[in-house]
Length: 180
Image 1 (cartoon, rainbow, N blue to C red):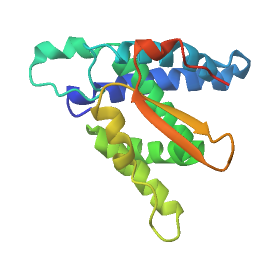
Image 2 (tube, rainbow, N blue to C red):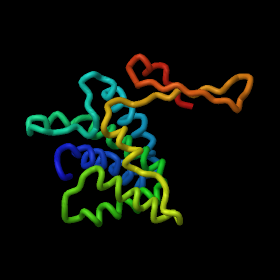
Image 3 (cartoon, rainbow, N blue to C red):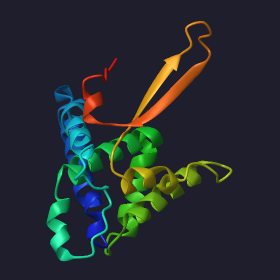
């Protein structure tokens, strides 16, 4: 990492990859699924607190560094990396990650360098050069604290009509979330 602002990049990736590695060796353990139930939910609980911080917290004073070694950097970092892999697809994600690691193998990098390499991988695979801008999509996840909760409902009389409502995750919502 270029500076401590990007600590999450180091620690979140370590938390993510440890589950990927174990899942590869022992798929029957379902480590990826367990991380959803353990680390991701723990990060959500921590991230709704007032003393939380964005994943990318600006570090101006070395005294701030120790406070970043927490569930937000490790667990929320791993959670958004996992979500990004799901959005991009495993092949694109890991090829973009390989591009990033090769490009910055003997230097330091920032979060935006990773986003750029992933965006380049997406664009190289599309004939018209367009596609998703990873930085645009991911900046809201790294620069803000909290998680969104999206409530989607289908009209009971016209099932093709769907409405949604968003709100910030909070403890009061914790017991109302159901996974189906």
